[in-house]
Image (cartoon, rainbow, N blue to C red):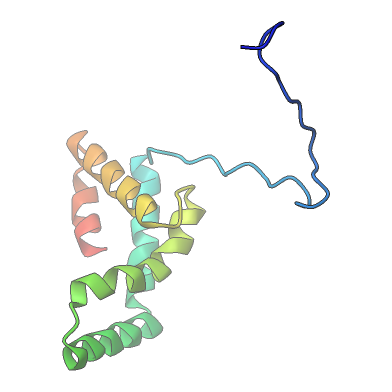
Length: 124
């Protein structure tokens, strides 16, 4: 304990050696509406049907069979490359966390009675 209370340092940005202050992280929307999910899942279906994605998936399957790798473990990062821009467009993190948030939103909207959403989610 110091006489007069704790020692407090006030630091002003910018620190010349660190460059400009980084922007705050983008706000993460935790819940998507049923309408947003329909649009998002539709875009994911289009991305998955794209010839370049299909070719990459076929190459990944072949590579896993030849190398005895687990396709499901290897598929996650591959699919995320197609999902990331769509997730980001709808305000979700372009990461596995964003996928989890999307899945949670789908489950919630299905539980609320948005019946067509489950079939679209299964297609995506």
